Image (tube, rainbow, N blue to C red; front, top):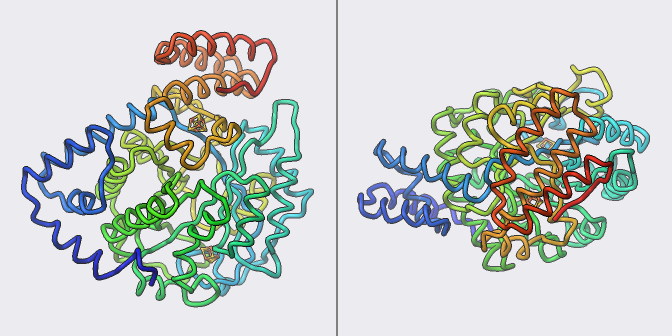
Length: 458
Ligand code: SF4
Ligand code: SF4
């Protein structure tokens, strides 16, 4: 077990936080309200809130943080599954090696076809997904896919950021991924509880808890400074998992000066071919909202992501509590964007709407969809991103970029009704840009985009 995740310590911390006084809880909530973030011990207290009054205040603060730091924006992305070959026996996953189905990996022509389809939906930011199989899906293949995607140019631009979600690997391999220009390296811990981890990961390289849990250390040593974490809620006690996330984050901050760039919050869902079908730790909606709110208070500058695993109703509520990124129009099958649906996905999707419907819906909800990828392309990654975020300057950057990318989307993918909606959103949000200079520049850039220019950002 890596030193930063100590099972007994987590259990004791959670137990010791159960009887925090009213004054202590108020102190912690006040601190969170000042956007100062929380220590793992303070998080343990919030995970044990029982008084409705405190919970209600926690939700209010989560909403306040969301509005203050992320405003009305929701950044959109799409997953791209390139290979479902997998040598691991993760019991909860439809791709586990005991599930007999015809596996495949995309040829480069198929990758191009999928990316063309995704680009025609307006996506600029992808999350590349693949199972673990060195023989059928070696790193050289993943690097080829990344290059293929970045080399593609379309009439309306290109895919501008490829985040990568592949198995834990060596420092040497992370260096190669870094050199390929990936965005965030995403790896879900699934569970920080080692006995559960061992029970769920019965075979394959991923069964090595230590190697998996220390993957971000190797990635960061290799130069990747944007890493995206997550646990699969439902495998074990969610309080334990959130504290595990916090300790992991603190470890990276201490060792490398920067913690998680994003945290994903997937909840377990049924999957065709999964070995395990019952989950005693399944998280209900009310508990889930509390977990999202606690994380929002604890790490206010870390992006929070939900996937299409969540229903429309839950997505609506979670956005208000801190979610800043979501996928839209997603397929969780290899080749799923160009083929008829109904093949073997990694899990079942709850929100099956088209991307354009999701984008329109975000605006109907009074929010601003964003296709921004500016930070990564301006070299604002890792601690450079965090210092920008912490000084509050992100507001003068994210909102202008969201509005410019929305204008681009409206011009390139929207019909007349959509353009009207986008124009209303832009009119409403533009005054929210605090700096006069940047507001004027953004308005000017929006006109330039209307006149045919593309890819303008701050
Ligand atoms: Fe393979 Fe990932 Fe599924 Fe595990 S979770 S079986 S590693 S695809
Ligand atoms: Fe994300 Fe940076 Fe764009 Fe803001 S400006 S939405 S932080 S990429």
